[in-house]
Image 1 (cartoon, rainbow, N blue to C red):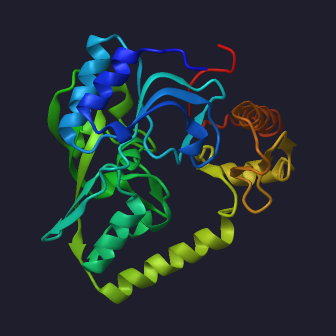
Image 2: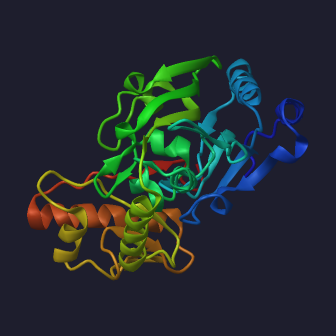
Length: 309
């Protein structure tokens, strides 16, 4: 349901950015990898940094709830959707190289950044060749895979803060740790990332990326919608192995299923609701805790409202 039915806000958003970049009452399952999520009151896709700043200021001045969506690859949006303004930076996708520095806008896919690095024979971003998220999302959670992570190569970032001001920050300013940063706590919106890479051999870099791509495609259920790895790796264990040893592969609640291909993934097998997906996450956590005494911490973020709220 369209809760913030504010014609003035709608018109203001269309002044800040192009009218085609503003959608009212938009289903968010159209914009998430899991194909889950109810409606956003306003779904906005700005084209410039200035537009992002102005939208943040509009939300502050109008006391309008504001949510940064990213590209929805490591996210579950609840069935009741999200009130207020939902911002997506999918139109900010430029990636440029200067020396061994790669500058990527936040809406670009981190996969595309790794491919750009390959084209210049820059080494350091090979680990990201199979991560489905955006550059902004990769910084948000310090994304990583196969022994590499964003903090290893990030030099600096351009962000908009919670007041709408543009800031230039060093990587150290973001407190990057295992699958976390201070970006959510600070209310930052990442606009741009600068990666410091090294010169390498094109053939050697490509061989590593080809190998990682093969491992990903052969082991992960990419043929179904999912949010990727659901849980962080618990100290001394592997989440997927714990779930597998708990005999939960194939476990299904509604249309959500623990993948038979990789136990660390939950797939949207058959028009699952967000509630079914989340209930399956809780079932896995409770089962693993009861069987092994290990607490599985979610890597995936859950946002939005329950249906009917």
